[in-house]
Length: 138
Image (spheres, rainbow, N blue to C red):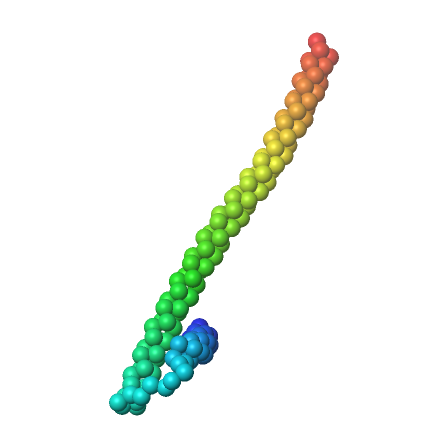
């Protein structure tokens, strides 16, 4: 409803503007010092009005088409920009996730090294105590 409402408002503004312009230009063109007589002035005036209305309708249609094309181009540009922004955001998220995974992997590796080092110390200490026990038995 809003699009049709705004379209109707644009159409009426264009029509009013064109009508004012058309009336001014027709007055400027048709102003002559001596009025001309016509055989049937009402028929000619009606024909002139019909022609002007048809011209006005054609002009309004042309301007509406131009307006719609411009809106479509704007919509296409907006969609491209949003798509590019989504791709950039996705890439940044992927980089952040990879960095977090790398940091977690580094912590796990360090914990494994620490456990391995402690286990090696524990094994050395136990082997040493077993040697001492064997030496005391002999």
